[in-house]
Amino acid sequence: MKRVLSLITFLLLSIHLFAQDNSANEIEMADALYADGRIYVVVAVIATIFTAIIVYLVNLDRKISKLEQQIKK
Image (cartoon, rainbow, N blue to C red):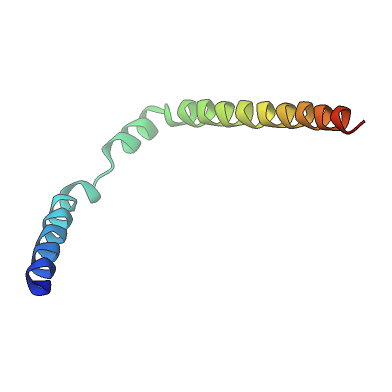
């Protein structure tokens, strides 16, 4: 029984690896964005989103700290 399960597992893994072979060699979207100069816009948008999330979390932490201090008093 173990041999059958092992065989099935290895067959499924090999099929999965063959499916990834063609797409691993080419990154067309990144090349197109870089060629058009749009990659900088994408990076700027992602950086803005992460900055906004960090600012929000810092403000939330300050508010929670103030509430905790008020509860202790």
